[in-house]
Each structure stands twice: as structure tokens, then as C-alpha cells.
Amino acid sequence: MKRTFLRQILAASVVLATAFAAPMAYAGDEAPDALIKRLSTEVLDSIKSDNAIRAGDMAKVVALVDSRIMPNVNFQRMTSSAVGPAWRQATPEQQKRLQEEFKILLVRTYAGALAQVSDQLIIMKPLRAAPEDKEVLVRSEIKGSGESIQLDYRLEKTPGQGAGWRIYNLNVLGVWLVETYRSQFASEINAKGIDGLIAALAERNKANSSPKKA
Figure 1 (tube, one colour):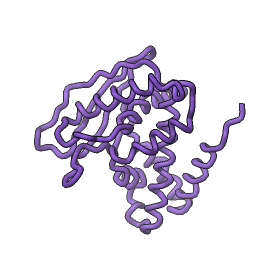
Figure 2: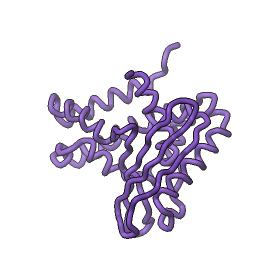
Figure 3: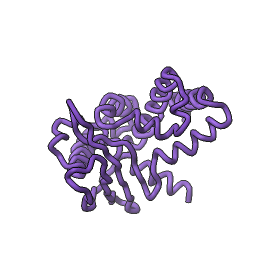
Figure 4: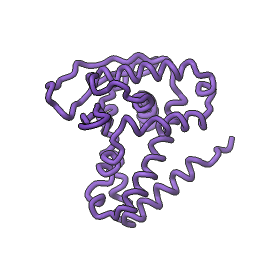
């Protein structure tokens, strides 16, 4: 049961990664659900045509996600939400380290899923939002060779220069990503404090970056 759920999480992360993987060139004029579908479709198509990625070139996948993720996500909001109340007690330096390590964790998670991409169909659900809404829920379903996957996004509209919709949370099969990490991080913070969480994330990232033995 747990393995099936983890496989579904990874498959859903593919589409999250693709939504992060292209610049929001005209997002200010684009509806949030149209944005998600466009980015997902464009990048999935490009991945399917990239033989290196399909062959499992993880360095290339990581570089792709790392270089393109930040313009499309409110990463500070994701990190602070995942850390929870302890974020406000963290020093600016600790906050900076948390964002750095959390970014690496997510980039490698997305990259691992991205490398496993296969033929999938994206079904967008009707958007229930008013024109003046600044935060919206975009619901979708991913259909492929296996089970259908519920995949929902929370987006916020950013003001000023470069205004547009930015992703700050993901729900897969009823589980919100930020809340899931918040539970894990809370245990680490309660046991060892903010510095303990930073150290744990750094250690996990170091282990994930090590070459895997056959």
C-alpha cells in the first residue's frame, strides 16, 4: 500500500515539476488553470522528445528543474509554511539555509519523478474562482497507464512587475505537500531545534546526491 502511494506521489510530482519548468512569459494575462495546463503540456512534450532525459540523465534533469523552478513558485512561502511557527523564531541566516536545503530536497524529488515521465493525459477540472480572487485552487487529474491521480495546485497572484500566478502548494490524492513536510519538520524541530532541522535536511540532500551503487 505504501509503495503504491509513493509511486503515485512520484508520478504526480512529474506534473508539478513540469508546471515549474517553464518561464511565465505571459502569466499576467493567463488564467491559472490555463497556465498549469499549458506549462504541463509544453514541458511534458519537450521531455518526451529529449533522449537524454528519457535515458535517465539525472544531472540534466536536476539542472533543468533547478534553473527553471524559481520563476514559477513562491518558494519562501512554501518553506515558511512547511517549517511552521518556528519560522518566525529563525534568524535571517537560518531562514536562508532552510530555503536553500528545502529547495535542494524538492528539486531532487521532482527531478527523480521527471526522469520517469511517460505518456500521460492531463484533465483540467472546472475552475471555481472569481475574477478578483488573489488565491485560487486549480484541480486536475492525471491519466496514464496506471491509476488516475488527483493533482491540485494552490496559486497566488503576485502584484507589481512580473505579476502573475505562482504556485505555493500541491495536493496529491488528498495530501497537501507543504502540510506533509510540516509534520516531518515539526518532529525534527521539537527534538533538535532549527539548526537540527537544517542539519537533517543537509544530510538527506548529501545522501541523495551520492552516486547509487548498482
